[in-house]
Image (tube, rainbow over all chains, first blue to last red; front, top):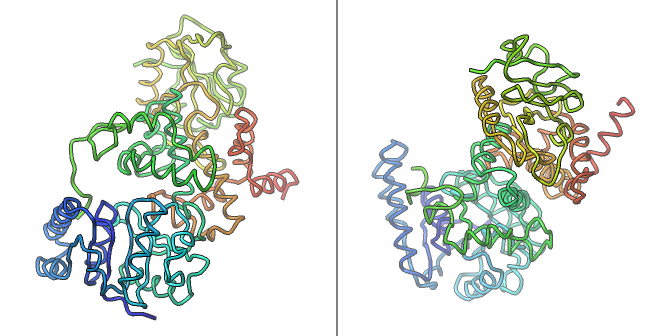
Length: 291
Length: 215
């Protein structure tokens, strides 16, 4: 098995920044890549804040954090990923974008580098197709917020080699995560259940069956869930839910996966959830979870 | 604080005999509570009451009160304490209102139930209310995906527990509370809504057949 030392993360949004924290915290050299400087700067601020809170809470020492950050670089130059043993992409949930990225990386990274996709809806086999190393592409879907959540859904594509999958699995366990194996099937386990479920919730609000607060209360009190679906949608981002719907509906053609009209209207109105301060509920913070 | 009287009309899933809620009931009261499987049939309008609560199963409150032009509503409200199959009743009460339900009746019913320690979610009068309407498709999909080998039952359960913070995965939950009960609820919703996601999954049908033959 390949030894994973340096980890690349493509995409410095909420998910990518969280994955980079997980890798850095496990002692890996980390290269966080994004095409936008401002996205990298936001990730840097959030990462510093997260590690700062970890020190305040006694989970990490300042020396440990200094060590992590000393081995953590951010870049807008994709060629800086050339020394990575494993690259995890957490970019826009779009098949063409992801395939182009892996195609580019194939020309930059050494032959042993494993490519992992954090896709939550797309086929690993399709993402890997034509990239030039289909046997070294795996699905590695982290959950939000990645720096706190232990679960990783891991899926081999049709052409993924057993050795690549074993290496990625061992890497994931070494991060302190808990991998579960799923088929390369739309949405894997989590989103296969969650995307249509959340759409049903939105349709329920739209149909006037119940208010968001009543739905959330019912789910939490009746089923013991920690978070109601409307709170969760606000956390995920309603614009992200639209993207998930589009990606998911494209491959399933299941009416429950199509974006509900209310969701589209809310996004058009700028009601994106926590990130915009208003979704199903109102918010006034933009801090990263945990620490 | 309103006083209330219980009128039993069969076995109640929401407030079975011995439930503490029953202890606070009197021989009369300004709120009437019809409980049991026959509650909708036993319901009689009484405008002198502040509110009348009618326990619901999978049926709508309109079965008791009647419906007309989408303008129905009175002092009657539906009440259902969420409970999965053989599991214990939860702390959640789904309180069902109609388009023209008297706001005073709604407030009084909510105050009574919250005062008894329940969480109350208000919803409109649709089969399945909030929870059954949302979760039955999820359970059917989980059972179907187990058949298709998406993941093992253990991994599927672990995934939703770790990934979504659910206290139980769908497979272990359905096995604990009785898969045949899930069949009955989702079959009833399938008959109302007619969409495939409410159609009982194969494993639920098998469990139902086994329960019918006494296995």
